[in-house]
Image (tube, rainbow, N blue to C red; front, top):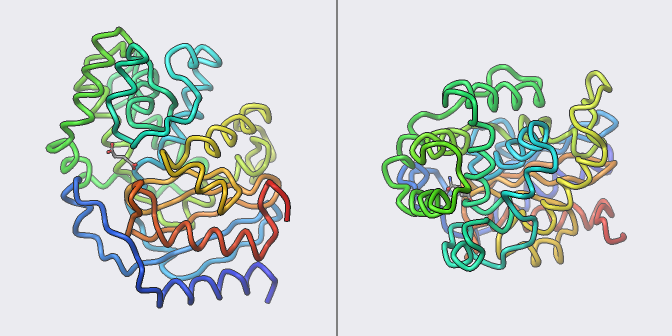
Amino acid sequence: MSKLQTAVRDIAEEMRVRTDRGEVATYIPELANVEPKHFGIAVVGVDGEVATGGDFAMPFSIQSVSKVFTLTLALGKAGDRLWSRVGREPSGSPFNSIVQLEFEKGKPRNPFINAGAIAVTDLILSGHQPREALGEILRFIRFLADDPSIAIDEKVAASEQRTGYRNAALANYMKSFGVLENPVELALGVYYHQCAIAMSCLQLARAGRYLAMSGRNPETGHPVIQAERARRINAVMLTCGHYDGSGEFAYRVGLPGKSGVGGGILCIAPGKASIAVWSPGLDLAGNSHLGRVALEALTKRMGWSIFGA
Ligand code: GLU
């Protein structure tokens, strides 16, 4: 068994028996039904080695992890023009905060807080019907994971659509400053559906490989995006990927990562591996508690922190 396989096996076993699991998100009613005992991990090395543990094959709601893929798509469409609509500084605020938006005249701090992600989705939507935009997002993720079976969990999307009062407030506020081009309800509809994409850890780790491989598709060797862009997406993941827990994640794990309130985290060890973990219980900043603990253990054992072994 390789060093990676042994580490993943040990970590999965350790996480299975831990009792400190955080709290499952309840503000999206459908997510409140998820069993907090799950833990899954999948690591896909740039050399093709795959190591998995726990519930690595079970699909979960990727939620905000989807924002990595929409940011990649939007940069492909708009290039650096994107940054005139959305900033790239850490927010230091909760994921759904509205306070900062007022100070900054409707321009969201970064593409990973909810306001920023809605603005990015709005950009993808421009010139399309919502169904086409959503199809483009889903096709892109299926292509990255090389898995056509990836789908949207309509129940989760409907559940958030019914209760997404804060996101509606953020979107309306941005619209009043002209930051959104499309009708608020259309941009939100696409956003809720992209968040409701269900993927397993293995599918997610496979989808993230291009970020560990300087933007290249591992199957074909062809670029998905330019190397420079992949490097920059990783930088934004490191500084903004865990909301106001981003500093703590960098301190403990030392890798770019993006969390979602479904309890998933996509984490990139550039030049080494793409990693996905899932544990539905969250910490106070809305990030997977055991997911972070597991990633900390993994980077320590493998010496993968970008800040040194
Ligand atoms: N769909 C969620 C929301 O907008 C995403 C938040 C997250 O995953 O952090 O509230």
